[in-house]
Amino acid sequence: MPYVNTKDILDKANKGYYAVPALNINNLEFLQAIIEAGVEENSPVIIETSEGAIKYAGDGDVQRGASLFVSMVRAFADNTDIPVSLHVDHGKSFKILMAAIKAGYSSIMIDASEYPFEKNIEETKKMVEIAHSVGVSVEAELGRLVGIEDNVMVQSHEAALVDPNEAKQFVEETGVDFLAPAIGTSHGAFKFKGEAKLDFNRLKKVKELTGLPLVLHGASSVPEEVKKLAEKYGADFRGAKGVPSDILTESVKYGINKVNTDTDLRMAFIASLREYLANNPGEFDPRKYFKTPKELVKNIIRERLRLLGCSNKA
Figure 1 (cartoon, one colour):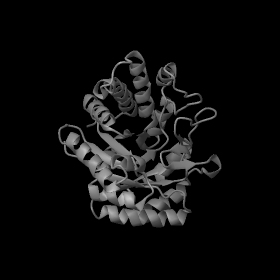
Figure 2 (tube, helix red, strand yellow):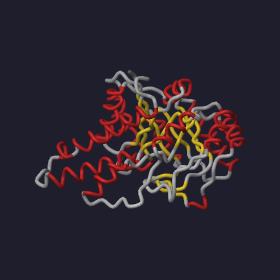
Figure 3 (cartoon, helix red, strand yellow):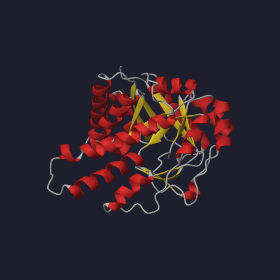
């Protein structure tokens, strides 16, 4: 199936009352795991790159990095039977967003959530006009999530939940295609001091007032078995805690259609890699020692696809 616009995937999910995970990649093995999982589950997949990943892929040249990711993803998408799209996660740099648009990304996220409401509207609307002129869809964020993810760092005193009435105004004035409302999640592996609790009433109201596909950031679940495996082989993930599966399925019920997933994949990869290297100290072929971690990442993705209801929705 051809490489598609992320809006096409999410509009279908919105109508069908399910969600699609947006899965971050940093290297070839993550991309292979995502495509293989999508094919095996007959599911659409949304592939994400952070600004940091684009810089990394291009060795500092963001146009080269963005073009490399588009070429890689298109090469896989053009040889599968599932819808595949490519999205920029938490775009704050105009230069990087323009590089992604020029390279041919399916969609971008403009994250101007650190600005006052009116400034957020202004910056988002500007990027929507540019992206829409070349058929690229746009995500934006309202409210602020606490935590750390790549180039995003928000302290707890700076976090704020979305105002549903502001969400309605924001969507009407900017023309965004999907919206990430802050409802109580946080970025990274160390999310909650107590039990996870999201504001579903707030989410339900945002959905009623906007009707758009909605996005859940900070949605990694930090599987206990992955955490234990990593720690068995020397990792220190004390205090790591994610969003429980039942809360993720509940969020879909109230209108979430895109669930960002990064931390779980990184933790699974490093846990399995630590195990393999510990048990195979003489191995130096990356094609061999990356194979097992890739399989664990794929299995984590398959579980997420089934959980969110997008298996057999390709």
